[in-house]
Image 1: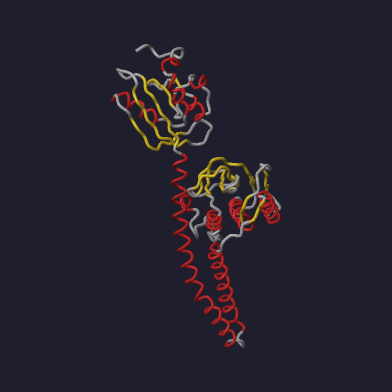
Image 2 (image 1 turned 90 degrees about the vertical axis):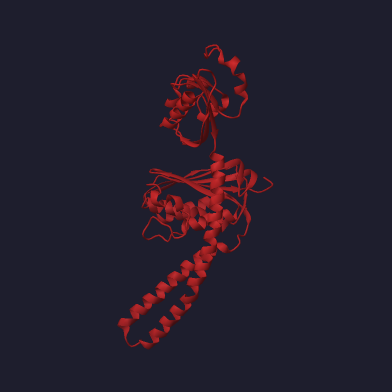
Length: 357
């Protein structure tokens, strides 16, 4: 086999240029000899620039990638990783399926295939969240009814007790506490049951929703809070329940403001997403709404179940804000997910504009 050089690889591996799968040809030491256009697109680096670097230098931690190449060459056989996270320099992590295959004998060169699996992971996560949300909804409904039934009796008994001790004002304070706490529980139960009403759809301008939320936030936190707009004003109208959308964005944004203790920056961003799968349906166009903050991030201990009811990172929180937001978004056939690290938390809501868009 002739020596592989940047001058002769186009003739030998021209067919790889046509593949949609990102592929590279590398030496054992990671020296890149070839990368097809799909690989350039995935890594956001041009071919000439790629060839100036070792494959392993392109990522923050490439130990698993280096081990895969060496194992494939040492054993003269394919090496496969089904789910590998690679973090390019200055970019977001990539979740890929990796296959490394020797292409000469004795093995000196390897064909590295990088198959992005982010879409599969998102679909799997969406399926998991749908099942979780359905289970949560049934649990909440049953729990709320069980709590609601005795509350009326507790409040009625407190009122009767007040008549009996009307001449002992020092005890009326305690019955007042009973009534107030029962009323607080009643409001909590009402909030738990509220998502189960069907939403009332109409044509909604999403930016009117965001402007309402922005006004509420700045009125409540006039000092220290900045709410920045980043809108795509060309977006079409959305068929949705306006009040529920306000509640979704407000719940997410308020969580962020409270985590930042009322001081920081929130960005309200809108974009169009094309060819997305939501709730097992393919949509040509969808709304991509993001609420971004520069707060401390979501604590690691609640990150995996942040949408569960009654889960909160604050002592004074009810743990219902994100649960309600998730429920309302799902009722609109959309999804909600987040990425979080200290200094940057981004909640992304995807909702279809409608079948005719």
